Image 1 (cartoon, one colour):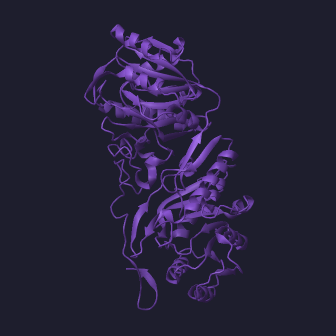
Image 2 (cartoon, one colour):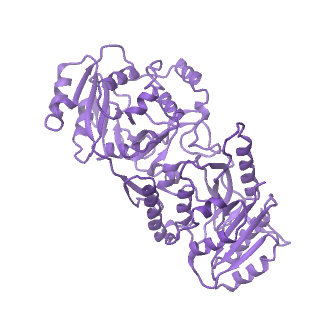
Image 3 (cartoon, helix red, strand yellow):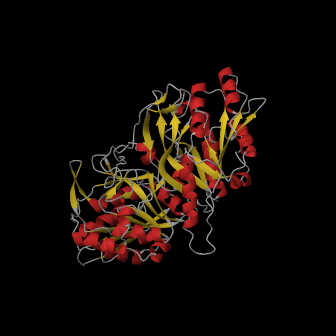
Length: 561
């Protein structure tokens, strides 16, 4: 059975909050634990007295520092005093759920039981759970339901936060908390502890209550601006360790980091655009869609990547092709506009395959003709992510004509849908989901970039799904190859969906998809079982948010009312 060392650093919290924290440790349903409490030279007499009283518990060890050294120094003292198999990080004013350690122990045992073949490493290096906020009025609110391990998202912001346990020997091997990163020390440790394909286990249950104390980040993220600068350094250091060339700065929201990856060399990106030369009206103006799609691409002068435009063209008036050549004239070498005639019935995968066969690029950007580039540098943003060998496909943010969100990644949780479809196009989303690069179960092929080698290895798009779900099948193939799919908000197009084609979904299409991927509707590691199935807006199941206040009973014990 795993033994846990809970490490808590203390510096002048509200004594009542500290007492609640200690109570939550003492009340654990798992009996085998130790609590290492490091007093970082507190000055509050109530805190000093409380620690003296509560350190008599046989499973609690109090370490007193002579002078205040900050959370990194105090945290390292706690790590040095710990003796358990895994170290659990608990803030001095937060509260554990009674079953927190029991659930973590069960998860570790499950990982061991799952190893049915000899030679499988059953070591669990990192565990984390869901959490919620403990409000000043004593109520629980704002549950944070997290995905399975999402390394790209962790780089963009510390989505894990609470509750975390890390294998103690791993922490020691890594050198503990790093000096100079106070306030971002947990994020930095998580970044280092999860590198190299280590085993990371998510327990999808609220096991920690993060208190909204007046000076805490939970109450107001502006309370610790220095922590976000330190976090940017931690992320930059990880990218350097991984050999990724990028600049990292604090992002548009507190706690979110903006990563600008440099494109290696000047890769050729083949933009494959199937079209029939359709026309329509957008914003009250007539347009020939593929012309505007191409014009927006070649008008982006910020791109380091070289573009090759591969237009797979149904029979169309001569003005379609001549217009394309006029648009790219002087902006691309003539040979980098490739027009591929296509005279068969509509078949999206077949048209993509025809375009790929004629393409020369090492990267393939699959793009609908009813799009218009909105954010300069979008292609480079996608290439920068796809340069990582374990990234198989990159998706973009797509907006409807009215500026609302059309695509924020796919969600497969009892439905197949676009995340947050119809939300405001500039909304950051719950937990900043729409403001960060993150892994998704899939992305739409209306704007998706892959390395050519990945496309060819997985066999391209399914030709037996000519209308719908071909991009879902492609996403499942990419994930089955062991690669990640990443969505980025920093690459953005308008998508005037359904203006060029309208293909209602037929029952046989879903049946065919499910026959190949029977788990697709329940296989979204980046959703959460506490979220309502069949929805793509992160609405939790009933009863998951809110709780009675934490109160003191007449006999002095604390409980939930």
